[in-house]
Amino acid sequence: MLAIVKRTDHMTHDPSVLALQALAWILSDEDRAQRFLALTGLTPESLRDGVTDRVVQGAVLDFLCAHEPDLVAAAEMIGIEPGELAAARERLDR
Image 1 (cartoon, rainbow, N blue to C red):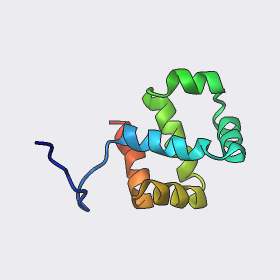
Image 2: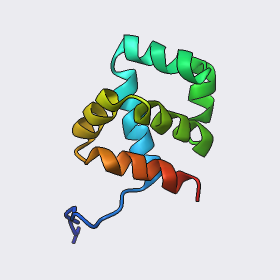
Image 3: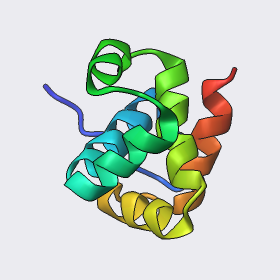
């Protein structure tokens, strides 16, 4: 039997999963994706090759944390509080 785990306020999300969800949101808009690449110095190839690298995932979360409207919008799309994305950035370094 498959158990369904409901999210609770104290549940901590995996920071890598949040970074990948945030990346999907970033890449869903061409202008935003281009701004992300320009500001991070990543290329489409380096992004594709490094998507599982914590440094690249950190760049995704740094990009969002540097611009509150994007942070809020990405968090809303993912279904979490913006602070959870910021906290995920800190947890990536552990």
